[in-house]
Image (cartoon, rainbow, N blue to C red):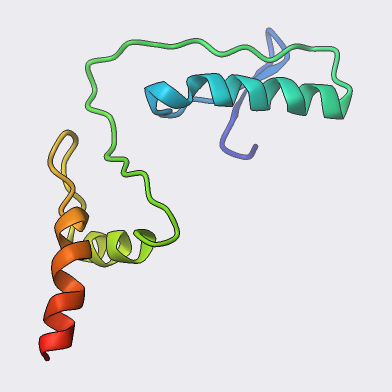
Length: 100
C-alpha cells in the first residue's frame, strides 16, 4: 500500500503495475474478495491501459524450476519476448554437474 498514490479529489488510492494478460481475472477476483473481507463500501476497479512501453520480463515458475530460473537470472534477465534460457538450464545443468 505504501507504493500507491493518494488522490485527495476522489479520496482513493491509485496503484499502477504490470499484470500478465491471463492473470487479470485472478487479480480482479482478489480485489473483490479483499473488499468483502474488509467490509469496505467502496468497490475496487481496475482499468487496462495500453502503452507503448515494453513490459518487464516475466517467467512462470514452479517449485522445481524456480532454482534454475534464479540461477539464470543471476547472470542476466532475458529481454521481453526472448526465449527463456532457464529451459535449457533445466536440461543441461544437472548433466554438466554430474560430469564434473
